[in-house]
Image (cartoon, rainbow, N blue to C red; front, side, top):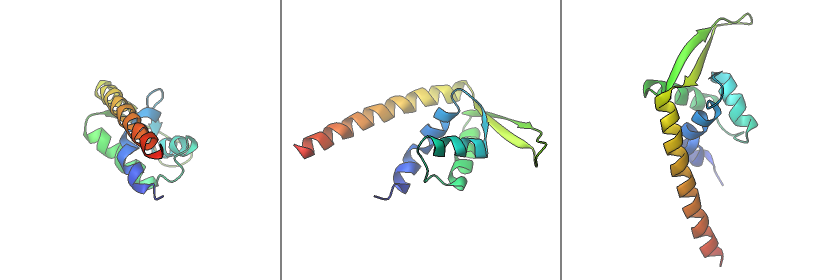
Length: 108
């Protein structure tokens, strides 16, 4: 099954979730997502999602100098981002539960 369309639908939620407890820069967020099992997520998708969530007012950002190359732009959740995470998480759980019931019914 091609999971690329599924990833597009849940990437905002996944990015917000990995930033819940710790701020991160683009590659760090990508690494955490892949480490969590989303190996197929693309670099450009994550960077685009971070920019979009920032423009939507869900994230704060700040720059940290790096000794090993260019400065890193870190992102973190603000109050709006935390509220969106809770709403999205609730919607995901409801949707996943509904789909699970449909799949169970189809298998019976």
